[in-house]
Amino acid sequence: MKIGACLAVSLSVLALILVLASFHGVDPEIPKQTRYRFTGYLSWLPELDGFDANELDATLLFNQILLLLSSYYAIKWAYNPPTNRKLITRFYSVGDRDAISIPTTDFDRVLATYIVMTLLAGLTIFLVGVGKIWVAVGVLHNASEFTILVMLGSGGRIKSPAFWPVLGAYISIITITCILFKYPYDALWFKGQGLVFDWALIIEFTRVYIATIRELRLGGANRDNLDELVVENEDDPIAHHKSYHAILNHPHQLLLLVVGAVFHVAGNVVFTVYKFSFFALLAFFFSYCITYPAYTYFIYLDLHVTSIYPQKRYYLPENPWWKVVTIAVVSIALAFLTIRIGA
Image (cartoon, rainbow, N blue to C red; front, side):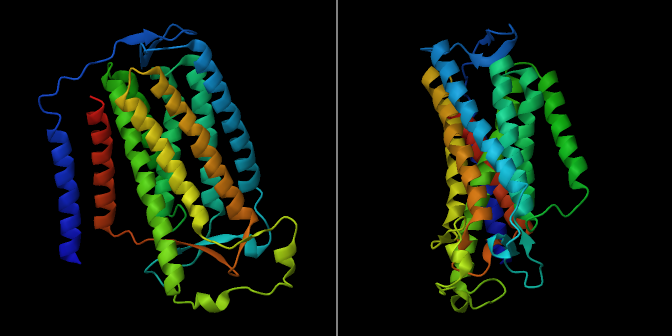
């Protein structure tokens, strides 16, 4: 295991070094800033080929309507969890047989908050454009992603009270540095650190899905014989409750998190690579129309639907130091690679 750990860390660091080395000799074209049409402030967005203000406003309006609806229902469902224990999903930690299972209600609430922060970030984009002023709100979107990653890495909850000062320090540092850095370093700095979280979410959501599938097939981290726990009693009143529908393919609802994260990154990658294309910007905004409704639908399924088991479970994979380091370095490498492709 020590050899495997060292190999994983070494390969991830090597990948990061190779990506950074690819910047050598590159003379990227720095986009000229434009002034935002409503405020006159300098924006991080360049002059876009094929720009149409009417199409942009229509896209933003559609985007905000979906985010508003997603935010409303996500908050409504996450902060009014069901009292029926069969509807409550619980996190189990793989490899820790003594760990106490954690309800996913706090995770759902953080996910709902993430959707709301994204709504506010989108609304601010429409009002003041993407630039230094927007950072004060946009950073809350990234802070929500950071919180989700910490929860998944610590058993499904925030264990340490030190997390909140760290989160506050992160928000302050990103905001202050973006204010002080000159263009284009402010835009690159904000874009880069945001991409790290975006890639990390794909990795973590995928790991949770794979770990849950594996543990359910093997009998669970606590070695329950889950095959003997399947509920097949058709007289079960819960199964016939008009609001509750059995999930026969549990835990595939976790794929909603994976798909949402993939579309979010895809939108970012497209606009990063084709930064002068107006249609790439539209694709970026349309990706939000898939990602955040998908997250909201996940919250609904997590809190309103039963499974074939008497208890719904998600298994969180083990996170020894070398896995944490590997995932962090790989996410940083992928963020730099995204920027490099668009250079």
